[in-house]
Length: 76
Image 1 (tube, one colour):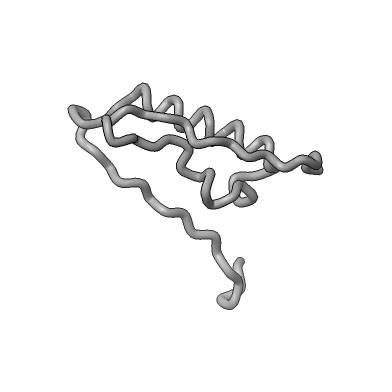
Image 2: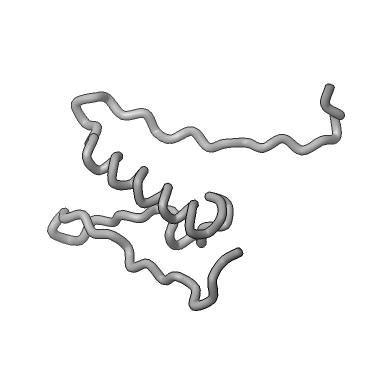
């Protein structure tokens, strides 16, 4: 049993989009990049805030990958 005073981890629920608006390719790329970042930083919680959303759209509605700034020293 858990103590009432124990902290529970909470997860944010992503917005659910209708299938006709869902971009499967973008989702696959985002999931892959997030996985790589989580592995390189040790866990998803350690990924810097500015890298948690790896893709962005420019003024011409084209998708681009955020510039990744990895630390110079290896992460244990």
